[in-house]
Length: 529
Image 1 (spheres, helix red, strand yellow):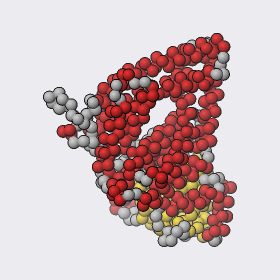
Image 2 (cartoon, helix red, strand yellow):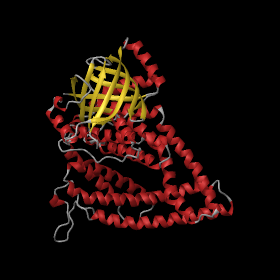
Image 3 (cartoon, rainbow, N blue to C red):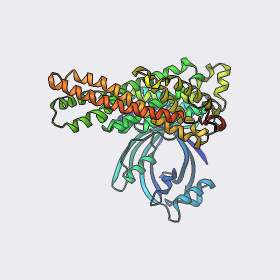
Image 4 (cartoon, rainbow, N blue to C red):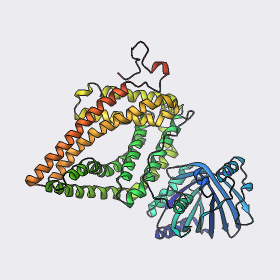
């Protein structure tokens, strides 16, 4: 049994041919082209797929090969999977020939009593080169052109697979960046199996939310940092196609969430990272955030303010004119967001960030003490980071009832950072103790976010109002402002309740005896004052 490590890049057919020519010029003739016919098998209810297992029988000029892939992960486009291959005499899957006992047992459990049946097939024309981008490093480049079929459904596939045969994984990113400099490519986060199952099941794409943190006790701080960042990149990539394909605002929203979480990860670990080395990847993350931000602002304003008030006053000509003006500005912001995500700069950002995280060349720039902390257990650093974030929230929230817009904005940022930090690190502490604070932080962030949306709405009303003049425009402006003021007052009331709930929470990263209210009614020093 082996572990497969590969990175996939999607391309147009013209780009594939161009890059094949460039690769041939640099690396020599490819191995003889192969025609690969593969059939993927599963139970009727796709039990293997639900367990993260793919069972494939492939035919080429040399005969039949059964391959079972399971477990593993996808990190910023790099697929790590456990792989078990065996030669067969025909196209019939043989569960008894799976060499790894654990993987064979998982396949049997997923299939149950029924024999595996075909779900979809792929027909691929593959050209292969093996290159050495660095000493003691070998990467196999596979240029694949073909089709995925399930019943009457078909989907074309045109991609480059970079499989690591020897050496560190970050060379896959560097090789991908070299290819991208020659022609536009797109990081592909889905395997052929994922696309095939989506085709077979007739699955309608939907916005993807962030997965719960998968950190575990025993990781080092640097391992935790990488795992968090890779999860954020995966979250961002999972919503890319949906963002570009249509106008569903949730795709954009989830992309923004992924970026905010990514920036928070850098911020959380900033005390351990070398500032100069961190700035280049952060600058690109900020660029993308600025490109997506205005479109998200208009989406929120439309959904929470404009649509509700227009629906209540359908015949108001001033509000209708304002709605048209807002939609023009919203469409302009959406086009800017789409251009950014569809750009080569976006793809280079992801590849460069993956290389930066996987290569860790920056770690050699660290002073000895910080390097030691980065290699130390994540639990200790997590408690320190959470305590630091909590102190900032305490400071920003003093005199809550009297805070103005600027102070509430700073409090919102502090609460958001604390919540993301808590979401990252909660799994390394007892789950039960974290629940109350996570609920309180969510409510607090919602209230502060609502207030911030109202402040943003004031600005957008002024921006749109410049093109809606006259008495009707003034009247529409006043109605919108009054609506926003009422919503702001509601959020203010919710804020007081959420702040009170957070104050009652114990700190789940401290020993239990220190983090809860004491029986005599006094408050522990570790409870939010």
